[in-house]
Image (cartoon, rainbow, N blue to C red; front, side, top):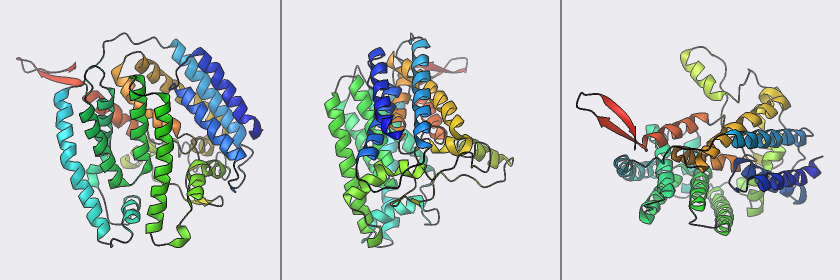
Length: 400
């Protein structure tokens, strides 16, 4: 059955594109990405283990529910009629100055801690110290500043009437610095995809530029990862470029084959991880928490990502995949419709969500990361409001 999946997905994409000719629509991104991922898994000689028989029906349920509900919600959602929200330049300047102060300090702190172990494996150490809870390194509250940095990049790319190229380049440079602090390719990918989307809808670039940029990103980051793993000094964990390509692009599909339906220790254990975090803090839940950094499995190349389907499959089985695919497709399509018809806040938020849609073949980035999405929504709102003090001492918040 898996052999027919690419054909089914691409035919579905053609039908929906005929109805809504928008390449960045959520169902369009999702179907194209899954078509490419499954085609590569089927026709490349990757040497990975075969995925489970449930993967094909799971993927069909996910793609069909996401696309159908998303398209219906898009059609039923009225177009935005409110005026564009302008960014509050005073708030933007304040956070830009703050970013210019905090980001170099955070980079110095991260590099200094890594250098305390020597210079030989600097790149490996900088990444390892971020993900290893026992490393003794912590960015503290500065780690949450990444959302401010993302928002600065998004609003700088979304400026339409008075686009400042130099300010945009400055925000892009700040994002690159944060990439070196965290050494996470996802951080870099999110910034790139959000920027490409906004620049495309404002007609600053063409699809060809997007394709070249994304291919360049894949090649450069995989070479960077190879260099980082080589610098660790452990030759057994050093992979060739081809092996890294397989690890990041295809291994999640094989890893999904090792998952078991309805195997979670508690209801919604993985899907509703943020809620369990809150319940733990309030003392209502005392069980083990789901670790967002999953354990590595051999497929036979080691990987710890299991596609976006895994949390729903582990918690609720195939039915959960259908239900949450519909829910996610509907919510994101609603945001997209509002944003594509002129709602500034929705457009900015959707720009942030595009990377998660593009990485569905890799990992789940909506429910598990809902706290990040909510933080971004709040920060985007703050960047577009104007606090006003009235003579009678009443404090008001107005649209900027």
